[in-house]
Image (cartoon, rainbow, N blue to C red; front, side, top):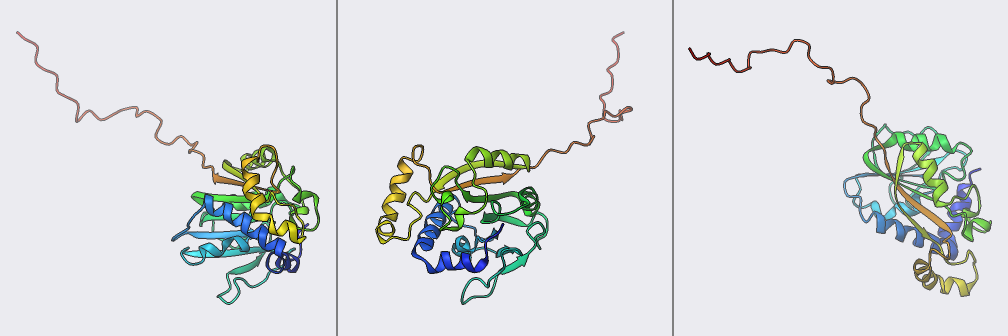
Length: 246
């Protein structure tokens, strides 16, 4: 089930732990996608904390918030770009999105296959999608003190298998949130150091969040096309036979 938008807002914007989580995930996203100039960027679930860096240069930024979660105006102090939608019916034209981010939208949905189908529909040719989900082996998926402690956690293999079944090609994956999901002051002061340290030993110490980048897989046309041979080809351009010597 989806979390309430007020709880998500309070965590990411009004707690030190939430702000630290927002920064860690957004930094990883910006390493994968440093810019989106002239592109259409959309986020589904509660992905708006990650979208702010693209507001200045993107052609359009859209925050899609599912009805069971609720919606809030975003960004603060600027023209609203968030919209309430059905979780499996987004108010976007087919193939119009260049970059798509899902956070707190897949693992909390009761219809994840339909969410993936909708994500595939709105993504354009050459578009990229980023899935931010709780890591099954991480500490954050085992604590209900954060939004990543709700819904279905994934391993990299589980998520990539599901993406392939719905027409996506996984390309790169990252892990982040190596710091404990604790509000205690000691861990908040140590957060940056733990994130840097965790990246060097990630095969041993799993991060709390898994980030998988994928592209939309487009199949080649399967119709007959022009593969049938012409039964009576024109001979107008064929070379004339030379005369036989006498």
